[in-house]
Each structure stands twice: as C-alpha cells, then as structure tokens.
Length: 88
Image (cartoon, rainbow, N blue to C red):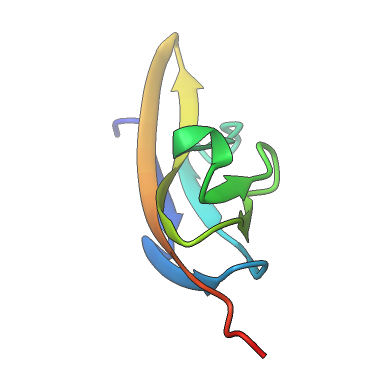
C-alpha cells in the first residue's frame, strides 16, 4: 500500500477568530504529520503539530498536511474560508 495522508474535514468555513482542529489519517499509521498554512498565515494559521486552525482575517487559505516516508513527501489539503466577524 502506498503511503498516504487524508485530512478531515477537507473544507471548512470559520468566522474571524474562530478555531477548528483538523485531523489526519496516515498510512503508515505512525507517520508524523506536519501542518502548514498558505499565505504565511495571512488568512488562517495552523499549529504545525496539532492541526489546530485559527481564522485570522477574511479570505481563503489552504492548510496542508505533509508526511514524509522514505524521503518522499505525501500531502493532502483542507480549504479554509474565513468570513468577517459580525459587527456589533
């Protein structure tokens, strides 16, 4: 079986300031997942080890989970849409 990583969920919408923790299923099961955010975290940031996403600013971002097996990287992504927080 080929190594793989599958992110769940693969698409989320958050309001500015909200958080959600993504999960990743890997094969092999002991593979270490490293999380990263597109745009250097401009719209959404992610904890590189826990997968906890924080919505930063209105816009969209891609969160990527990466595992490296035998020197080869395998990735999967989650599309994040950040909506403006309602004005009070």
